[in-house]
Length: 295
Image 1: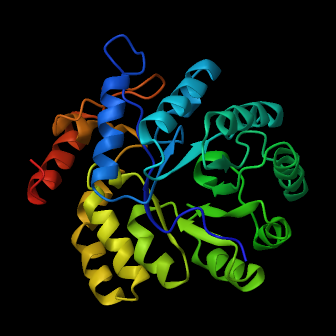
Image 2: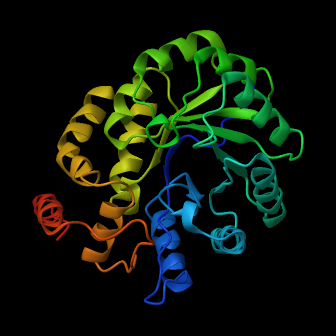
Image 3: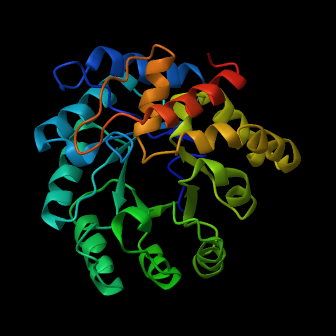
């Protein structure tokens, strides 16, 4: 049996930038510390929420190194290392391993739209060149390609593939994957608004955008699910649905950075082609945050 990289709640960390567009490491460190103090079970650096797509290779490596050192073994560090260039994914993975990361997160190659055979070869090529456990990442709304349950079954036969962050919203795929892959190919929700139903189907927790803002809530929600108290967890999920919807009024991470800036967390600006929220959506977000007592 594999051991899951983590169970519970893991923030998909934003990457704060300063006024010049460089990584604001002081704010980044404070964000990491705040998440750990709130009781999260792991942190994920340089994922979608961290704007990894607009980071240079050098910045990406530096951000992972900083995160690993700042965390200092207090929780697990999952390093985003995905790319639509397999060789680049290997390069990032090897550097993350050298930095001391505990696991890797690998999104399906975007834009290329690989076949299922291509996906299998891509992931097996990476796995042959690193020793860390790998969490697959399925988010077809961004990448244009989705895993099938049969591909999960094939990859699950390699113990290095620890499981998958599922952000497809496809519950049939989730159930079919659980049926084909058994209990030790682990699944984590990639959608904050689906944590409880996914954990009811066997997911081990969430890699969360909302945790950047409300880490204690996401920790509590996942712990209730792990304790099989789905009634209480459902009430918490429903209570925060309005805020979770507001955090996705525009493409992630635009709203979560706006929210963090509103509470003084210094998330800073976004990198083009992402830009600030519209005034209308920002007001909706602000109102939702106020209703939840965050402002």
